[in-house]
Image (cartoon, rainbow over all chains, first blue to last red; front, side, top):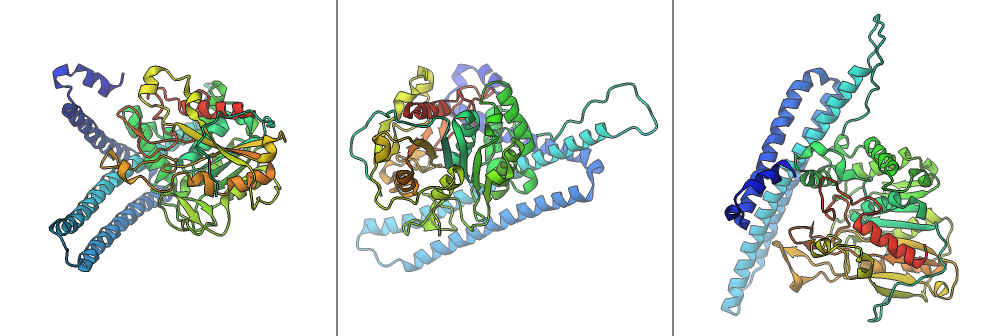
Length: 171
Length: 361
Protein backbone atom coordinates (compact mmCIF):
# COMPACT_ATOMS: atom_id res chain seq x y z
CA UNK A 1 0.00 0.00 0.00
CA UNK A 2 1.42 3.38 -0.96
CA UNK A 3 1.78 6.33 1.37
CA UNK A 4 -1.24 8.07 -0.15
CA UNK A 5 -3.33 4.90 -0.17
CA UNK A 6 -2.65 4.36 3.53
CA UNK A 7 -3.76 7.92 4.27
CA UNK A 8 -6.90 7.40 2.20
CA UNK A 9 -7.62 4.12 3.99
CA UNK A 10 -7.38 5.91 7.33
CA UNK A 11 -10.18 8.32 6.39
CA UNK A 12 -13.49 7.30 8.05
CA UNK A 13 -15.93 5.72 5.57
CA UNK A 14 -18.44 8.55 6.09
CA UNK A 15 -15.96 10.92 4.46
CA UNK A 16 -15.08 8.62 1.60
CA UNK A 17 -17.75 9.92 -0.72
CA UNK A 18 -16.90 10.79 -4.35
CA UNK A 19 -16.53 14.52 -3.63
CA UNK A 20 -14.11 13.89 -0.78
CA UNK A 21 -12.19 11.45 -2.92
CA UNK A 22 -11.89 13.98 -5.75
CA UNK A 23 -10.69 16.63 -3.31
CA UNK A 24 -8.25 14.12 -1.88
CA UNK A 25 -6.98 13.36 -5.37
CA UNK A 26 -6.60 17.08 -6.13
CA UNK A 27 -4.75 17.53 -2.83
CA UNK A 28 -2.38 14.70 -3.65
CA UNK A 29 -1.60 16.08 -7.10
CA UNK A 30 -1.06 19.61 -5.77
CA UNK A 31 1.24 18.38 -3.02
CA UNK A 32 3.10 16.26 -5.58
CA UNK A 33 3.57 19.32 -7.72
CA UNK A 34 4.82 21.46 -4.83
CA UNK A 35 7.11 18.73 -3.50
CA UNK A 36 8.52 18.10 -6.97
CA UNK A 37 9.22 21.80 -7.37
CA UNK A 38 10.80 21.97 -3.92
CA UNK A 39 12.85 18.84 -4.50
CA UNK A 40 14.07 20.11 -7.88
CA UNK A 41 15.08 23.40 -6.28
CA UNK A 42 16.96 21.75 -3.44
CA UNK A 43 18.72 19.28 -5.70
CA UNK A 44 19.70 22.02 -8.11
CA UNK A 45 20.98 24.27 -5.32
CA UNK A 46 23.04 21.44 -3.88
CA UNK A 47 24.35 20.14 -7.15
CA UNK A 48 24.76 23.05 -9.53
CA UNK A 49 27.91 24.58 -8.05
CA UNK A 50 29.78 21.37 -8.83
CA UNK A 51 28.01 20.91 -12.17
CA UNK A 52 28.54 24.38 -13.56
CA UNK A 53 30.31 23.19 -16.68
CA UNK A 54 29.73 24.81 -20.06
CA UNK A 55 27.79 21.73 -21.23
CA UNK A 56 25.45 21.79 -18.25
CA UNK A 57 24.87 25.52 -18.55
CA UNK A 58 24.13 25.13 -22.24
CA UNK A 59 21.63 22.36 -21.54
CA UNK A 60 19.97 24.47 -18.84
CA UNK A 61 19.66 27.32 -21.32
CA UNK A 62 18.21 24.92 -23.93
CA UNK A 63 15.59 23.80 -21.40
CA UNK A 64 14.60 27.42 -20.77
CA UNK A 65 14.42 28.04 -24.49
CA UNK A 66 12.21 24.98 -25.03
CA UNK A 67 9.81 26.23 -22.35
CA UNK A 68 9.72 29.67 -23.94
CA UNK A 69 8.98 28.12 -27.34
CA UNK A 70 6.11 26.07 -25.90
CA UNK A 71 4.67 29.18 -24.26
CA UNK A 72 5.02 31.11 -27.48
CA UNK A 73 3.19 28.35 -29.39
CA UNK A 74 0.44 28.33 -26.81
CA UNK A 75 0.12 32.09 -27.16
CA UNK A 76 -0.24 31.69 -30.92
CA UNK A 77 -2.99 29.11 -30.41
CA UNK A 78 -4.81 31.53 -28.11
CA UNK A 79 -4.76 34.41 -30.59
CA UNK A 80 -5.63 32.12 -33.52
CA UNK A 81 -8.56 30.74 -31.52
CA UNK A 82 -9.81 34.21 -30.68
CA UNK A 83 -9.44 35.30 -34.30
CA UNK A 84 -11.44 32.27 -35.49
CA UNK A 85 -14.26 33.03 -33.05
CA UNK A 86 -14.22 36.69 -34.06
CA UNK A 87 -14.38 35.74 -37.73
CA UNK A 88 -17.28 33.39 -37.09
CA UNK A 89 -19.20 36.10 -35.26
CA UNK A 90 -18.62 38.42 -38.19
CA UNK A 91 -20.05 35.83 -40.59
CA UNK A 92 -23.24 35.25 -38.59
CA UNK A 93 -26.35 36.32 -40.44
CA UNK A 94 -29.86 36.75 -39.12
CA UNK A 95 -31.59 33.79 -37.55
CA UNK A 96 -35.04 32.68 -38.70
CA UNK A 97 -36.12 31.31 -35.37
CA UNK A 98 -35.56 32.24 -31.77
CA UNK A 99 -34.03 28.83 -31.08
CA UNK A 100 -31.56 29.27 -33.95
CA UNK A 101 -30.56 32.68 -32.60
CA UNK A 102 -29.78 31.25 -29.18
CA UNK A 103 -27.98 28.29 -30.73
CA UNK A 104 -25.73 30.65 -32.72
CA UNK A 105 -24.96 32.73 -29.63
CA UNK A 106 -24.37 29.69 -27.43
CA UNK A 107 -22.02 28.12 -29.99
CA UNK A 108 -19.72 31.14 -29.77
CA UNK A 109 -19.72 31.13 -25.96
CA UNK A 110 -19.08 27.37 -25.96
CA UNK A 111 -16.17 27.80 -28.37
CA UNK A 112 -14.70 30.51 -26.18
CA UNK A 113 -15.15 28.31 -23.10
CA UNK A 114 -13.40 25.46 -24.87
CA UNK A 115 -10.54 27.75 -25.86
CA UNK A 116 -10.08 28.99 -22.27
CA UNK A 117 -10.29 25.47 -20.86
CA UNK A 118 -7.83 24.19 -23.47
CA UNK A 119 -5.37 26.96 -22.67
CA UNK A 120 -5.63 26.32 -18.95
CA UNK A 121 -5.19 22.56 -19.37
CA UNK A 122 -2.20 23.08 -21.66
CA UNK A 123 -0.64 25.46 -19.17
CA UNK A 124 -1.00 22.95 -16.33
CA UNK A 125 0.38 20.26 -18.61
CA UNK A 126 3.37 22.42 -19.44
CA UNK A 127 3.93 23.04 -15.73
CA UNK A 128 3.98 19.28 -15.07
CA UNK A 129 6.17 18.77 -18.13
CA UNK A 130 8.73 21.30 -16.89
CA UNK A 131 8.83 19.84 -13.39
CA UNK A 132 9.19 16.22 -14.54
CA UNK A 133 11.74 16.96 -17.25
CA UNK A 134 13.77 19.31 -15.08
CA UNK A 135 13.79 16.75 -12.23
CA UNK A 136 14.84 14.01 -14.64
CA UNK A 137 17.58 16.16 -16.15
CA UNK A 138 19.05 17.21 -12.81
CA UNK A 139 18.86 13.61 -11.51
CA UNK A 140 20.90 12.45 -14.50
CA UNK A 141 23.45 15.20 -13.90
CA UNK A 142 23.81 14.41 -10.22
CA UNK A 143 24.15 10.71 -10.90
CA UNK A 144 26.75 11.27 -13.62
CA UNK A 145 28.72 13.55 -11.24
CA UNK A 146 28.67 10.90 -8.50
CA UNK A 147 29.74 8.21 -10.94
CA UNK A 148 32.61 10.37 -12.15
CA UNK A 149 33.74 11.08 -8.58
CA UNK A 150 33.73 7.38 -7.71
CA UNK A 151 35.64 6.48 -10.85
CA UNK A 152 38.33 9.18 -10.38
CA UNK A 153 41.77 7.69 -9.53
CA UNK A 154 43.33 8.85 -6.25
CA UNK A 155 46.78 9.94 -7.50
CA UNK A 156 49.71 8.94 -5.35
CA UNK A 157 47.66 7.04 -2.83
CA UNK A 158 47.62 3.31 -3.08
CA UNK A 159 44.61 1.54 -1.77
CA UNK A 160 44.04 -2.06 -0.94
CA UNK A 161 40.28 -1.63 -1.10
CA UNK A 162 38.44 -2.60 -4.21
CA UNK A 163 36.86 0.42 -5.78
CA UNK A 164 33.18 0.08 -6.56
CA UNK A 165 32.49 0.04 -10.30
CA UNK A 166 31.05 3.27 -11.63
CA UNK A 167 27.33 2.98 -12.06
CA UNK A 168 26.25 4.13 -15.47
CA UNK A 169 23.48 6.58 -16.12
CA UNK A 170 20.88 7.15 -13.46
CA UNK A 171 17.28 7.27 -14.48
CA UNK B 1 -10.91 -0.94 -50.29
CA UNK B 2 -12.10 -4.04 -48.52
CA UNK B 3 -15.42 -5.03 -47.10
CA UNK B 4 -16.34 -7.74 -44.67
CA UNK B 5 -19.62 -9.56 -44.61
CA UNK B 6 -21.62 -9.59 -41.39
CA UNK B 7 -20.26 -12.92 -40.18
CA UNK B 8 -18.09 -13.33 -37.11
CA UNK B 9 -15.75 -16.24 -37.76
CA UNK B 10 -13.37 -18.09 -35.52
CA UNK B 11 -9.75 -17.34 -36.32
CA UNK B 12 -8.45 -20.37 -38.24
CA UNK B 13 -5.18 -22.24 -38.55
CA UNK B 14 -3.12 -21.96 -41.73
CA UNK B 15 0.13 -23.25 -43.17
CA UNK B 16 2.17 -20.57 -41.41
CA UNK B 17 5.97 -20.67 -41.29
CA UNK B 18 6.88 -20.52 -37.61
CA UNK B 19 9.34 -17.88 -36.47
CA UNK B 20 8.85 -15.85 -39.67
CA UNK B 21 6.24 -13.44 -38.37
CA UNK B 22 6.63 -9.69 -37.98
CA UNK B 23 4.81 -6.82 -36.31
CA UNK B 24 4.36 -3.11 -36.91
CA UNK B 25 2.35 -0.25 -35.50
CA UNK B 26 1.81 3.46 -35.23
CA UNK B 27 2.10 5.50 -32.01
CA UNK B 28 0.73 3.42 -29.10
CA UNK B 29 0.71 0.58 -31.63
CA UNK B 30 4.41 1.27 -32.16
CA UNK B 31 5.17 1.23 -28.43
CA UNK B 32 3.21 -2.06 -28.28
CA UNK B 33 5.13 -3.31 -31.32
CA UNK B 34 8.41 -2.90 -29.42
CA UNK B 35 6.94 -4.67 -26.37
CA UNK B 36 5.53 -7.53 -28.43
CA UNK B 37 8.76 -7.82 -30.41
CA UNK B 38 10.84 -8.12 -27.24
CA UNK B 39 8.41 -10.29 -25.29
CA UNK B 40 8.25 -12.84 -28.13
CA UNK B 41 11.41 -12.20 -30.12
CA UNK B 42 11.66 -15.91 -30.93
CA UNK B 43 8.44 -15.61 -32.95
CA UNK B 44 9.45 -12.57 -35.00
CA UNK B 45 11.96 -11.70 -37.68
CA UNK B 46 11.46 -7.97 -37.42
CA UNK B 47 9.38 -4.98 -36.46
CA UNK B 48 8.15 -1.71 -37.94
CA UNK B 49 7.95 1.20 -35.52
CA UNK B 50 6.20 4.33 -36.73
CA UNK B 51 6.50 7.03 -34.06
CA UNK B 52 7.17 4.82 -31.06
CA UNK B 53 9.51 4.78 -28.08
CA UNK B 54 11.70 2.15 -26.47
CA UNK B 55 10.72 -0.76 -24.22
CA UNK B 56 9.42 0.21 -20.73
CA UNK B 57 9.86 3.86 -21.59
CA UNK B 58 7.30 4.83 -18.94
CA UNK B 59 9.72 3.59 -16.27
CA UNK B 60 12.54 5.91 -17.28
CA UNK B 61 12.36 8.25 -14.26
CA UNK B 62 10.56 6.65 -11.30
CA UNK B 63 11.29 9.77 -9.23
CA UNK B 64 8.73 11.76 -11.21
CA UNK B 65 6.05 11.13 -8.56
CA UNK B 66 5.76 9.35 -5.21
CA UNK B 67 2.82 7.28 -6.48
CA UNK B 68 4.00 4.66 -8.99
CA UNK B 69 0.89 4.90 -11.15
CA UNK B 70 1.26 8.68 -11.43
CA UNK B 71 4.96 8.36 -12.24
CA UNK B 72 4.21 5.98 -15.14
CA UNK B 73 1.74 8.36 -16.69
CA UNK B 74 3.94 11.42 -16.13
CA UNK B 75 6.91 9.60 -17.67
CA UNK B 76 4.86 8.57 -20.66
CA UNK B 77 3.52 12.09 -21.25
CA UNK B 78 6.55 14.24 -20.50
CA UNK B 79 9.56 12.02 -21.20
CA UNK B 80 8.31 9.50 -23.78
CA UNK B 81 5.94 11.69 -25.81
CA UNK B 82 6.97 15.31 -25.26
CA UNK B 83 10.51 15.66 -23.91
CA UNK B 84 11.40 19.36 -23.73
CA UNK B 85 14.95 18.79 -25.03
CA UNK B 86 16.93 15.76 -26.26
CA UNK B 87 18.55 15.42 -22.81
CA UNK B 88 15.14 14.72 -21.26
CA UNK B 89 14.18 12.04 -23.80
CA UNK B 90 14.20 8.42 -22.59
CA UNK B 91 17.58 6.99 -21.71
CA UNK B 92 18.26 4.19 -24.20
CA UNK B 93 21.18 2.76 -22.18
CA UNK B 94 19.06 2.46 -19.05
CA UNK B 95 16.14 0.89 -20.94
CA UNK B 96 18.38 -1.58 -22.79
CA UNK B 97 19.74 -2.72 -19.41
CA UNK B 98 16.19 -2.99 -18.14
CA UNK B 99 15.28 -5.13 -21.17
CA UNK B 100 18.21 -7.46 -20.48
CA UNK B 101 17.18 -7.71 -16.82
CA UNK B 102 13.60 -8.46 -17.85
CA UNK B 103 14.85 -11.22 -20.16
CA UNK B 104 17.12 -12.61 -17.45
CA UNK B 105 14.10 -12.75 -15.14
CA UNK B 106 12.34 -14.88 -17.75
CA UNK B 107 9.54 -12.36 -18.35
CA UNK B 108 10.39 -11.91 -22.05
CA UNK B 109 12.27 -14.02 -24.61
CA UNK B 110 16.09 -13.87 -24.51
CA UNK B 111 17.26 -10.72 -26.30
CA UNK B 112 19.73 -12.82 -28.32
CA UNK B 113 16.81 -13.68 -30.61
CA UNK B 114 16.87 -10.08 -31.80
CA UNK B 115 20.36 -10.31 -33.29
CA UNK B 116 19.33 -11.11 -36.88
CA UNK B 117 16.08 -9.16 -36.86
CA UNK B 118 15.38 -6.26 -39.15
CA UNK B 119 13.76 -3.11 -37.83
CA UNK B 120 12.13 -0.18 -39.61
CA UNK B 121 11.89 2.99 -37.49
CA UNK B 122 10.19 6.18 -38.64
CA UNK B 123 9.61 9.62 -37.18
CA UNK B 124 8.03 12.48 -39.10
CA UNK B 125 9.95 15.71 -38.69
CA UNK B 126 6.65 17.51 -37.98
CA UNK B 127 5.37 14.99 -35.44
CA UNK B 128 3.96 16.87 -32.44
CA UNK B 129 2.59 13.82 -30.62
CA UNK B 130 5.62 11.54 -30.25
CA UNK B 131 8.66 13.77 -30.61
CA UNK B 132 11.55 12.69 -32.82
CA UNK B 133 13.97 12.83 -29.86
CA UNK B 134 12.15 9.83 -28.38
CA UNK B 135 12.07 7.83 -31.61
CA UNK B 136 15.81 8.41 -32.06
CA UNK B 137 16.26 6.67 -28.70
CA UNK B 138 14.33 3.67 -30.01
CA UNK B 139 16.97 3.28 -32.72
CA UNK B 140 19.74 3.53 -30.12
CA UNK B 141 17.89 1.05 -27.90
CA UNK B 142 17.80 -1.58 -30.65
CA UNK B 143 21.47 -0.98 -31.47
CA UNK B 144 22.37 -1.58 -27.83
CA UNK B 145 20.46 -4.85 -27.91
CA UNK B 146 22.68 -6.05 -30.73
CA UNK B 147 20.73 -5.37 -33.92
CA UNK B 148 23.16 -4.69 -36.73
CA UNK B 149 23.23 -1.12 -38.05
CA UNK B 150 22.57 -2.34 -41.60
CA UNK B 151 19.40 -4.09 -40.38
CA UNK B 152 17.91 -0.86 -39.08
CA UNK B 153 16.16 1.45 -41.54
CA UNK B 154 15.79 4.71 -39.60
CA UNK B 155 13.98 7.48 -41.43
CA UNK B 156 13.57 10.97 -39.96
CA UNK B 157 13.67 12.85 -43.27
CA UNK B 158 9.98 13.11 -44.18
CA UNK B 159 8.12 16.31 -43.14
CA UNK B 160 5.20 14.27 -41.82
CA UNK B 161 3.01 14.81 -38.80
CA UNK B 162 1.99 11.99 -36.49
CA UNK B 163 0.64 9.42 -38.92
CA UNK B 164 1.01 6.34 -41.05
CA UNK B 165 1.58 7.48 -44.60
CA UNK B 166 -0.42 6.37 -47.63
CA UNK B 167 -1.02 7.71 -51.12
CA UNK B 168 -4.80 7.98 -50.63
CA UNK B 169 -6.22 11.36 -51.70
CA UNK B 170 -8.86 11.29 -48.93
CA UNK B 171 -6.24 11.10 -46.17
CA UNK B 172 -5.04 14.15 -44.22
CA UNK B 173 -2.28 16.47 -45.49
CA UNK B 174 1.20 15.09 -44.81
CA UNK B 175 2.30 17.56 -42.13
CA UNK B 176 -0.82 17.40 -39.95
CA UNK B 177 -1.16 15.88 -36.48
CA UNK B 178 -4.84 14.96 -36.34
CA UNK B 179 -7.11 11.91 -36.24
CA UNK B 180 -7.37 9.52 -37.95
CA UNK B 181 -3.57 9.93 -38.15
CA UNK B 182 -3.48 8.57 -41.70
CA UNK B 183 -1.74 11.13 -43.91
CA UNK B 184 -1.19 11.39 -47.62
CA UNK B 185 2.40 11.32 -48.85
CA UNK B 186 4.22 10.05 -51.91
CA UNK B 187 4.80 6.49 -50.70
CA UNK B 188 2.91 3.73 -48.91
CA UNK B 189 4.52 3.24 -45.54
CA UNK B 190 3.16 -0.25 -44.86
CA UNK B 191 4.97 -1.43 -48.00
CA UNK B 192 8.23 0.06 -46.76
CA UNK B 193 7.76 -1.71 -43.42
CA UNK B 194 7.13 -5.13 -44.96
CA UNK B 195 9.78 -4.63 -47.64
CA UNK B 196 12.47 -3.77 -45.13
CA UNK B 197 11.65 -6.62 -42.76
CA UNK B 198 11.06 -9.39 -45.28
CA UNK B 199 13.30 -8.37 -48.19
CA UNK B 200 12.30 -8.30 -51.83
CA UNK B 201 8.55 -8.78 -52.27
CA UNK B 202 6.18 -9.12 -55.22
CA UNK B 203 4.41 -5.90 -56.21
CA UNK B 204 1.08 -5.32 -54.45
CA UNK B 205 -2.06 -6.82 -56.00
CA UNK B 206 -4.25 -4.43 -57.91
CA UNK B 207 -7.27 -6.68 -57.36
CA UNK B 208 -6.74 -8.66 -54.16
CA UNK B 209 -8.59 -11.94 -54.08
CA UNK B 210 -8.41 -12.66 -50.35
CA UNK B 211 -10.92 -12.13 -47.56
CA UNK B 212 -11.01 -9.73 -44.67
CA UNK B 213 -12.47 -11.71 -41.78
CA UNK B 214 -13.93 -10.49 -38.53
CA UNK B 215 -13.20 -12.65 -35.50
CA UNK B 216 -14.21 -12.56 -31.85
CA UNK B 217 -11.33 -11.29 -29.71
CA UNK B 218 -13.09 -12.20 -26.46
CA UNK B 219 -12.18 -15.86 -26.75
CA UNK B 220 -8.53 -14.79 -26.44
CA UNK B 221 -9.28 -13.06 -23.13
CA UNK B 222 -10.82 -16.04 -21.38
CA UNK B 223 -7.84 -16.23 -19.02
CA UNK B 224 -8.90 -12.99 -17.28
CA UNK B 225 -10.40 -13.33 -13.82
CA UNK B 226 -13.75 -11.72 -13.04
CA UNK B 227 -12.22 -8.65 -11.35
CA UNK B 228 -10.07 -7.88 -14.37
CA UNK B 229 -12.99 -8.49 -16.72
CA UNK B 230 -15.24 -6.16 -14.73
CA UNK B 231 -12.55 -3.48 -14.62
CA UNK B 232 -12.08 -3.94 -18.41
CA UNK B 233 -8.33 -4.09 -17.89
CA UNK B 234 -7.90 -5.60 -21.35
CA UNK B 235 -9.37 -2.50 -23.04
CA UNK B 236 -9.77 -4.58 -26.21
CA UNK B 237 -12.73 -4.46 -28.59
CA UNK B 238 -15.10 -7.37 -29.11
CA UNK B 239 -13.83 -7.97 -32.64
CA UNK B 240 -10.54 -8.06 -34.46
CA UNK B 241 -9.80 -8.49 -38.17
CA UNK B 242 -7.50 -10.57 -40.32
CA UNK B 243 -6.75 -10.43 -44.03
CA UNK B 244 -6.33 -13.93 -45.49
CA UNK B 245 -5.04 -14.17 -49.08
CA UNK B 246 -6.78 -16.71 -51.33
CA UNK B 247 -3.59 -18.72 -51.86
CA UNK B 248 -3.16 -19.02 -48.09
CA UNK B 249 -6.73 -20.26 -47.72
CA UNK B 250 -5.86 -22.85 -50.38
CA UNK B 251 -2.94 -24.11 -48.27
CA UNK B 252 0.08 -22.20 -49.58
CA UNK B 253 2.82 -21.48 -46.98
CA UNK B 254 2.25 -18.12 -45.29
CA UNK B 255 3.80 -15.62 -42.93
CA UNK B 256 1.89 -13.52 -40.41
CA UNK B 257 2.26 -9.78 -39.97
CA UNK B 258 0.56 -8.11 -37.02
CA UNK B 259 -0.54 -4.51 -37.73
CA UNK B 260 -1.34 -2.46 -34.63
CA UNK B 261 -3.36 0.73 -34.89
CA UNK B 262 -2.63 3.77 -32.73
CA UNK B 263 -4.77 5.71 -30.27
CA UNK B 264 -8.20 6.76 -31.57
CA UNK B 265 -7.86 4.36 -34.52
CA UNK B 266 -9.76 1.27 -33.39
CA UNK B 267 -12.91 0.44 -35.37
CA UNK B 268 -15.24 1.42 -32.49
CA UNK B 269 -13.38 4.43 -31.14
CA UNK B 270 -15.72 6.96 -29.55
CA UNK B 271 -14.54 10.39 -28.43
CA UNK B 272 -14.95 11.29 -24.77
CA UNK B 273 -16.45 14.79 -24.70
CA UNK B 274 -16.24 16.49 -21.32
CA UNK B 275 -15.51 13.08 -19.83
CA UNK B 276 -18.53 11.31 -21.34
CA UNK B 277 -18.60 8.85 -24.26
CA UNK B 278 -20.00 10.92 -27.11
CA UNK B 279 -21.87 8.15 -28.91
CA UNK B 280 -23.95 10.68 -30.84
CA UNK B 281 -20.82 11.89 -32.64
CA UNK B 282 -18.69 8.81 -33.20
CA UNK B 283 -15.80 9.47 -35.61
CA UNK B 284 -16.69 8.39 -39.13
CA UNK B 285 -13.45 6.65 -40.02
CA UNK B 286 -14.23 3.25 -38.43
CA UNK B 287 -11.80 0.64 -39.67
CA UNK B 288 -9.85 2.71 -42.17
CA UNK B 289 -6.60 1.52 -40.60
CA UNK B 290 -7.62 -2.03 -41.52
CA UNK B 291 -8.83 -1.31 -45.04
CA UNK B 292 -6.86 1.62 -46.48
CA UNK B 293 -3.29 1.57 -45.19
CA UNK B 294 -1.99 -0.72 -47.95
CA UNK B 295 -1.07 -3.80 -45.92
CA UNK B 296 -3.69 -6.04 -47.54
CA UNK B 297 -2.68 -5.43 -51.17
CA UNK B 298 0.94 -6.36 -50.49
CA UNK B 299 -0.15 -9.28 -48.30
CA UNK B 300 -2.26 -10.64 -51.12
CA UNK B 301 0.62 -10.97 -53.56
CA UNK B 302 3.11 -12.27 -50.98
CA UNK B 303 1.02 -14.70 -48.91
CA UNK B 304 1.06 -12.69 -45.72
CA UNK B 305 -1.80 -13.00 -43.26
CA UNK B 306 -2.32 -9.55 -41.75
CA UNK B 307 -3.68 -9.68 -38.22
CA UNK B 308 -5.37 -6.51 -36.97
CA UNK B 309 -6.09 -6.76 -33.23
CA UNK B 310 -8.29 -3.93 -31.94
CA UNK B 311 -8.14 -1.86 -28.75
CA UNK B 312 -11.00 0.29 -27.50
CA UNK B 313 -11.44 3.20 -25.12
CA UNK B 314 -12.09 2.50 -21.46
CA UNK B 315 -12.33 5.13 -18.72
CA UNK B 316 -14.13 3.57 -15.78
CA UNK B 317 -12.20 4.54 -12.68
CA UNK B 318 -10.08 1.37 -12.81
CA UNK B 319 -8.75 1.50 -16.33
CA UNK B 320 -7.84 4.90 -17.74
CA UNK B 321 -7.56 4.58 -21.48
CA UNK B 322 -10.17 6.88 -23.02
CA UNK B 323 -8.40 7.12 -26.36
CA UNK B 324 -8.31 3.38 -27.04
CA UNK B 325 -4.50 3.14 -26.97
CA UNK B 326 -2.50 -0.06 -26.59
CA UNK B 327 -1.04 -0.34 -23.13
CA UNK B 328 2.53 0.88 -22.85
CA UNK B 329 2.27 2.69 -19.49
CA UNK B 330 0.57 0.12 -17.28
CA UNK B 331 -3.17 0.80 -17.31
CA UNK B 332 -3.87 -2.93 -17.70
CA UNK B 333 -1.88 -3.80 -14.56
CA UNK B 334 -3.94 -4.44 -11.45
CA UNK B 335 -0.95 -3.61 -9.24
CA UNK B 336 0.84 -0.38 -10.10
CA UNK B 337 3.69 -1.27 -7.75
CA UNK B 338 4.44 -4.32 -9.89
CA UNK B 339 3.20 -3.38 -13.35
CA UNK B 340 3.04 -6.04 -15.99
CA UNK B 341 2.17 -4.47 -19.31
CA UNK B 342 5.36 -5.48 -21.17
CA UNK B 343 5.91 -9.18 -20.46
CA UNK B 344 4.65 -12.37 -22.07
CA UNK B 345 1.98 -12.44 -19.34
CA UNK B 346 0.67 -8.92 -19.98
CA UNK B 347 -3.00 -9.13 -20.88
CA UNK B 348 -2.81 -7.62 -24.35
CA UNK B 349 0.50 -9.25 -25.29
CA UNK B 350 -0.76 -12.66 -24.24
CA UNK B 351 -4.02 -12.25 -26.15
CA UNK B 352 -2.30 -11.08 -29.36
CA UNK B 353 0.32 -13.80 -29.20
CA UNK B 354 -2.42 -16.39 -28.71
CA UNK B 355 -4.02 -15.07 -31.91
CA UNK B 356 -0.69 -15.52 -33.69
CA UNK B 357 -0.42 -19.07 -32.37
CA UNK B 358 -3.96 -19.84 -33.49
CA UNK B 359 -3.01 -18.77 -37.03
CA UNK B 360 -0.09 -21.18 -36.84
CA UNK B 361 2.75 -18.72 -36.18
